[in-house]
Image (cartoon, rainbow, N blue to C red; front, side, top):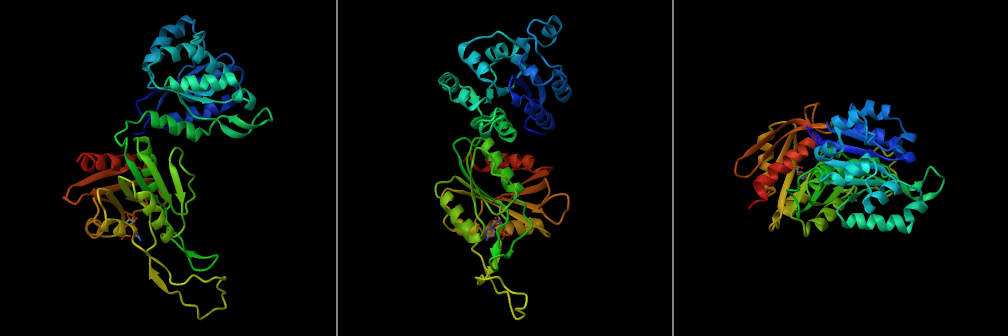
Length: 400
Ligand code: C5P
């Protein structure tokens, strides 16, 4: 069950070259189970055909206000009322000006005026147009009226100029849409999430690490952000890009993770350690590359700092949550860690199973609490599991 499941998203596509990117937006929304209703403006149809958007959205594309058949089936008031979210991507200077000015002379501008759903606008236009006094003033007024925006990116535009004006990344637009459709049980909470492995150097080119992909921690951070928390994500080396709308701190070693997490934890309400922190590091990392002829090289290890255990010793009002990746005796090991590290909850998963755990997109976990309560979260995407973990923590820990 995705965030968009059971949701009606009305997507307005207006006349800019970025209109072709609306195809990807429709596909992603559909993939996450939204019902997508596209409204294409006349100038939008100069860039992309209604047939393309209709095929991808699996719904008739609405263009005409005064078509008797479509008005009776999907009229402007019905579209405006059914929408859980109205997304305009790309939004031209023209449609932004019309919305600001209260003009309703086509289907899209009329639906915008008639809806009570949140309206998310992703502007895309030439840099000079974007910088113009008229557009900037219109944007400021619309923001003050509660319209939501995904700011355009910078780069080379189709017209050849370089600067702001390019439609924001589709991933960022979708994340903002998810944000707007998620309830905010974590509003006002400051959350720190750690993710990924750490890498402990042996010499300038080699290191000791583990198979953690960071996917679960990133999902925990994204979910907390959508649920209204102010999130700092502290990540070890992963292939994942920084998630939008939250602060990401990149580290490599357990020592660096300890400093970054401790700093962020100072005024945090919750610390969730999802990272697979290395338990050992080289006692001494060589300053030059170890040669293969160095037959007598012996790797000597020393333990790394246990971040959670250290935080657990002077916990204050902070809620501390650990993750336990186990290959055997899951419940006993998880409970023992929760007790030893003075945690408020521990999320345990069985990483010996190929279908869940490390590199997988899915997971299945059990959340243990010190009073003996256990919440089982059955197999789901890591995003789904993250929402389930936060809801379990919220129901149990944050309402005291
Ligand atoms: O003891 P173990 O490593 O299995 O405990 C797992 C939990 O402790 C995870 O939440 C992990 O992020 C955290 N941890 C830590 N510092 C370490 C090792 C693990 O905070 N050095």
